[in-house]
Structure formats: structure tokens, C-alpha cells
Amino acid sequence: MIESWTFSPREGVPPPVAPFAHATAAAETLYVTGQMPTDLDGVLVNGGIVEQTEQVLANLRQVLALLGGDFRDALATRAYLRHWEHYADFNATYARAFPQRLPTRTCVGVSALALDALVEIDLVAWRAGGWSARTHDTSGTRGAAA
Image (tube, rainbow, N blue to C red):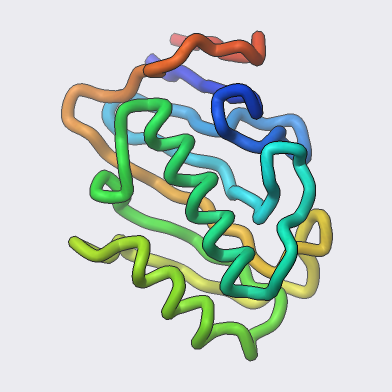
């Protein structure tokens, strides 16, 4: 069974910048869509790569928490950086989010990101027993497909 969730700012997740689910589970594997460095109003946070990376990680952390997980469940991430000269500062900020175990990661330089962001990160996680929302879904877009 495949199940998807789209969360709202009332649940601590910024609104999506396009039509997508924040997370989709296929059994015990969870795919979290790329998160942007936006606040609960959908506005790009102030600051540079450190502040934007911290916000992206906070958004990912919140999506995982709403489904009963945390960064210890992370298997892999993909990071997209708009400026390669930010790589060292990005790495230092990113590494602090995973003190127990780093997931595998791909990091690529891109020419542009939505909202003119400096960074975007998506995540794949795994939990024995699967995933379920720990909150009432207020978005109206939660659904399941067999």
C-alpha cells in the first residue's frame, strides 16, 4: 500500500511551493519531498546558506516528526546547492543535524531553485512497521492508493 501526506502550516510545515505531497510511504520506506528554506508563511528565510540549510533541515525534521520519525530513520538525502562556494558551510551545518549516523547523500550544484533559494534537500527514510500520521491532516490531500 502507498500512502501520501500533505501537511499545513498549522502542523508546523510550510505550504508547498507546487502541487506535491510532503511525504509518500511505500510500506516501511518514506520519501520526503525536497524542502525549501521557507517559514510557515511560505516566505524564504533571511540569511545565507547556514540559515537556509537550518530551515530546510527543520522542515524535514517536522515532516518526519508528524509521521513518528526523526533523522535517525534517514537512509539517504539529496541536496541541491545554487552556489558551490557554499559547500563547506552547507556541510558543517548539515553534519550537525545527524550526530548519530550520517545518511548516504548526493549533493549537486544547480543553476536555480524555486523561490531563488540557495539550498533544497529531500530525504528517504525507513522504519520497521511503516509510517502513520501522528496529527490530524488538515490539508484535505491525504490519500492512499493500493
